[in-house]
Each structure stands twice: as structure tokens, then as C-alpha cells.
Amino acid sequence: MDLYDADPRAVVRFLPGDLLAIFAFVLVGTLSHGSLTPQRYAGVLVPFVVGWVVVAPFAGGYDASVRESTRAALLYGAASWLGADFLAQLLRGTPFFPGNADPQFFIVALVFGTIALTVARFLTLVIVDYRS
Image: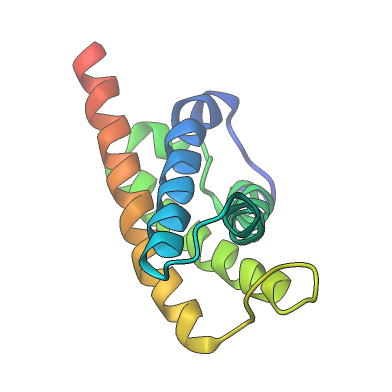
């Protein structure tokens, strides 16, 4: 695997579900805190989407192997989320986004974001297998 080894077919296959999982993760979080407004949702969402789009291609989230192996798809997705969550927390620590870079929130986002992405990737693989 090169530093940047994103396979366009893997991006097409997994990116929609990955983004849907991140959107849902942030939606559930803002709803559970009773702070759902369009501005708040966007402010919380943007750091995670930026983190994912920046980190996942470099961390193997869209490597050619994720198309060939369920295990690779899930493990590289989780590893990519670790980096994306870290970058998102750094962004949240700036005055441009709501919230802060709380270590507890990093752990919560890591656990629940990983679960959301793993479920989304697994469902993507099930749908692809079903359609094949």
C-alpha cells in the first residue's frame, strides 16, 4: 500500500455509506444532547466529514483490498475513523466549530463512530454481494 492508494471503485462502493454513517452518528449525538438546530448540526458535522475525507484515503479506507476482503473493509474503516476522529477533535478545538477537543468526547466519538461505520460498511458489502 502506497501513502495514497485509494481505489476509485472502492470510493464509489463505500463513500456513500460511510458519509451516511457519519451523518447519522452526528444526528443521533446532537439529538441526544437536545441541541439539534441546522447550524449546530452543520457545525458538529463538518469537522467529522473533513476528518474522514482527509484521513480515510491515506489510512487505507479506500484501498483496493477493502473491495476484496470484508475484514480489510471493516479494519481499514475503523483505523481510518481513528485518524478522522482525531483530526475532527483538533478542528473542534478551534473557535470555528462548536464544542471542544474533550478527551472523553474523543473516546465516545471513536466508539460510536466506529460502530456506525462498521455497520454501514457491512451493510454495503451485504448489498453488493446480494446484487452480484
